[in-house]
Length: 294
Ligand SMILES: Nc1nc2c([nH]c(=O)n2[C@H]2C[C@H](O)[C@@H](COP(=O)(O)OP(=O)(O)OP(=O)(O)O)O2)c(=O)[nH]1
Image (tube, rainbow, N blue to C red; front, side, top):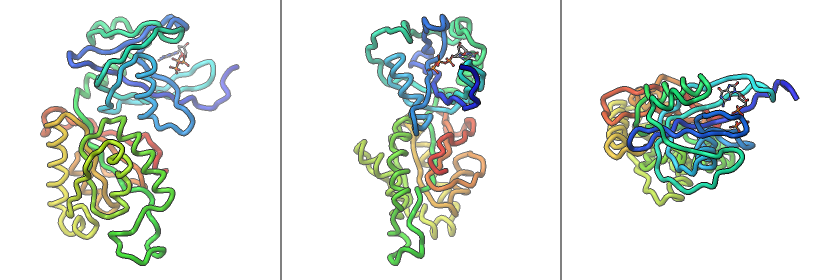
């Protein structure tokens, strides 16, 4: 069957171990050597799919770091787009070889560049090397909240709408894909509730700096910048991803302080930046592939 026109979506990762080696697979069906990746399941976020596919194809449990350029190519089943991340190995689990992937192994980047069958994988590897290692700093707008006129309590206590709660559940999987260890939120309920499913699943405390609330953030952008800079230092110090959840009027300052381009985030949408071990250095800015907010 050729070219129905429907785009095939996939996601994968250039995975690095602690010695800087990269993980490749052999696929007997295609007789090729590639980076691990695979198709999204229905409704699945690409970041979540990337982590799942790497685990299924290699047994490697990974945390995502920088997002890399999306790759497009035609296939007999239709045009295909693959979202890629740089990722680091957290744990290697055993995996039984099968017809899809009969071997997964580690190569130096130079060896991998020689062995990979497809040029696009070589380009993804080059982008991963250019991004360098480092955890993600994630800036997130809270999920869809109850309308102001539908709520007669204080604005700080205004809760998420049911759609916002669903976004929060999806975000819990996305934040897990990045291996988030530090959760920071405006104390407003709609922000806290956006990161609560993730924090409670992982037994993490949510830090609640008052400086991220709407009135404080708008009044004192310098304090917002300090909160974000502290978060970036924490990520660089621990090597683990950090998420900051805030409000639309404060997000421009949060994004700027994170070194991300200005963007009008819709509820539940996020942007990530990868931080190298040196918090002063600037990593590549990244877009949100999620569509959670859309
Ligand atoms: N992996 C990969 N395959 C490519 C590229 N360019 C290209 O023409 N192909 C060909 C090889 C295969 O014959 C065909 C489909 O391979 P694929 O890896 O995209 O699809 P798949 O369904 O077998 O695998 P997956 O998405 O489940 O991982 O596309 C490329 O850049 N990467």
